[in-house]
Image 1 (cartoon, rainbow, N blue to C red):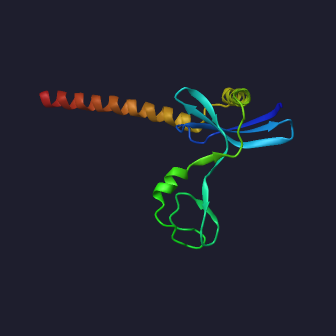
Image 2: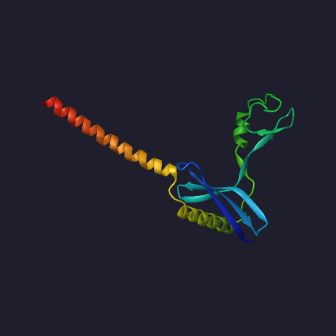
Image 3: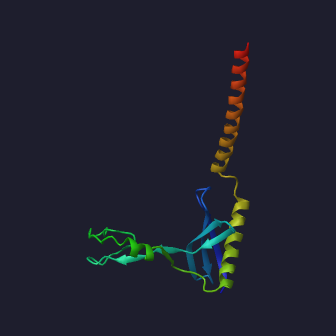
Length: 157
């Protein structure tokens, strides 16, 4: 198995732990989309595409999230299944590597593509805005200090 294409899209919120989304193509014939690149405590890691675990409505049999108390389709009351829901709710991977070697291979290729995009892209507007805001905050502190000094000098005179 060979990775023939990796496409990375940077996440829109810079302060979020999710740094990017990736699509990985295998052997030019199979693609896995919505792989998330996340900044964890020990560096970057991948989260494979997943879906929320679901249950069936006993009245209309539609698939609904485990945490639902009412069916969004027919409105049936599903009871207070908080204990059962908390035990089974969560998510499950739609696609994932079977062994560590494959996981490391995919991770390294996605991080490589991510780093290339970071190197190519100019600073974003949000980063520039953050820098301006930090500068303005420093100036406000300096301005407040100057105003208080002037007030003290005037009051002493």
